[in-house]
Image 1: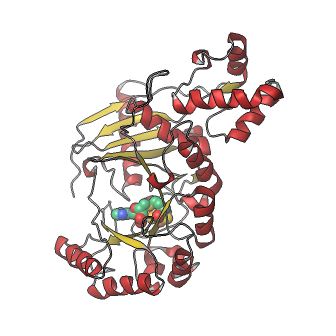
Image 2: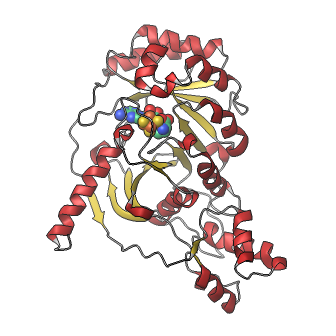
Image 3: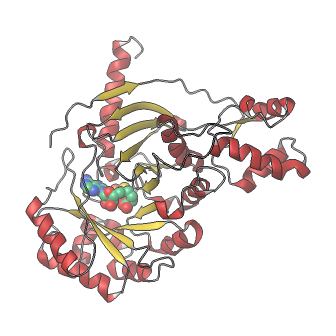
Amino acid sequence: MSPKAPITQDVMTIPRKLPEGKMNLVGLTRDQLRAALIEHGTPEKQAKMRTGQIWQWIYQWGVRDFGEMTNLAKAYRAQLAEHFVIEIPEVVTRQVSEDGTRKYLCRIAGGHEVEVVYIPEEDRGTLCISSQVGCTLTCSFCHTGTQKLVRNLTAAEIVGQVMMARDDLEEWPTPGAPKDETRLLSNIVLMGMGEPLYNFENVRDAMKIAMDPEGISLSRRRITLSTSGVVPEITRTAEEIGCLLAISFHATTDETRDVLVPINKRWNIEELLQALASYPNASNSERITFEYVMLDGVNDSDEDAHRLIDHIKRHNIPAKINLIPFNEWPGAPYKRSSNNRIRAFANIIYQAGYASPIRKTRGEDIMAACGQLKSATERARKSRKQIESEAGLG
Ligand code: SAH
Ligand code: SF4
């Protein structure tokens, strides 16, 4: 795979000004928002109504400036601006692939960077968001897992990625105008950098905001959380978030899965399958996605396909199997299975009665495909440095 030059690459270096001592309202739950308003002078009696108004401005209309909140008294707007900000991650670079995929490099507090990918399709637009900077897990086929620096993203930084993409897609409605039902950003997948179930509360709060009907209002069925298999948190995902679940399965024996997805040493295949079998929301209309990366000679035999089906059938799990052609990265210890091998594997699964779509690789020319996100960050970092030094800034 030789990444081609992207069609466009805008580089914006917006200085990050975090006004001292001000609190960011983005990412707060409704209760937290209400408490923050009361703490800073909103009379308790009015707090519920003000919470609703401010919530709508932020999440329904995409407003970031208290001055634009025209249904609030001028003095109250000024009071809000004194104590609060409405802040989302800043876009550092934005690349658009030949196939329309957009990749954003976003800067968050502390100068860390995360990547966000927007994938337009005929009937939907999916935003792939990150939950951590890097990942503490070390799946051997994933480049993100080799990144040392890790911190959990805040709820603001997680829902902020969605707001940032809506900005770029110019998808905020105009206040007062009728609701537009066609959505450029219709789906969210938590499949970027990080293990979302190791940052449960922030992911939950952010997704609750994305689902809130008086705001971004995405259906819980249009949000998919992908986990490598943090077994104790799986049930909570259904109970507290209610979104769809995808599992990075990737191997059919513990021996192989221990190597590919080392969290398997903590919770093995059997324990994982038991947790999935009792996933509260799973049904034929809400199947669990088994993600399976196709690695040449490692996990892609006919026997693997049969074992995979056997695991799923034995536990009676409503499932679909998403085969992911391995995306190579510099120094990766694996090769992608051949197209024929992937098709043969898919066919065995299909014959057994399960959907077995092969994930189309998107945004490869801008290194936006699954598992390529770390290298992309480093490349972008380098090019920004070069740009800054060329401009005499560095
Ligand atoms: N940490 C979570 C979510 C992020 S990874 C998880 O592991 O599920 C999103 C998906 O991309 C996972 O299924 C992951 O296994 C897959 N992936 C990682 N590296 C990849 C690569 N190099 N090629 C193809 N898929 C990859
Ligand atoms: Fe982390 Fe997921 Fe990559 Fe594993 S596949 S290292 S859990 S991001």
